[in-house]
Image 1: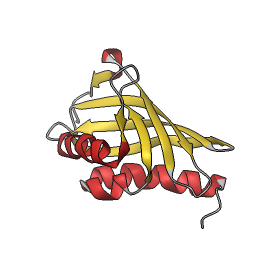
Image 2: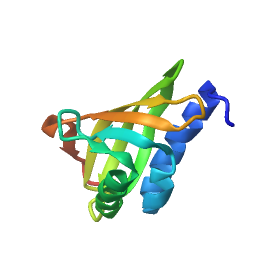
Image 3: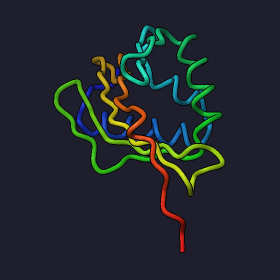
Image 4: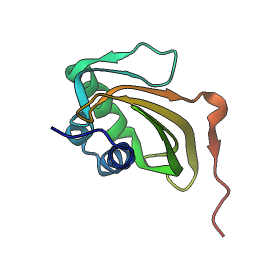
Length: 130
């Protein structure tokens, strides 16, 4: 049984973005408790449980070309929060969606809830590369 530590939460948040970037839906879902709840974006209908998460992350992995942490995760107890950058597939050099993801973890280190804070104002075009 894993002991929940700050290091574990940081590693899990990194694994989350790495799995999405790799298109590994099952790898993402494995990070979550069986009855976990995802609300992405906040205010949308939540996805509850592995079957719903599998459906949600299939779509996410098909639409996100690259995802990365922006800065260091903030951790306190069983909570972790971090700004994340999602680059849409096929437009990785042209557009970014800025999110703030807040995750809650259980005692064995699985994510029990994830809320992604972002809206239309967080989708922006990137300047052309010179």
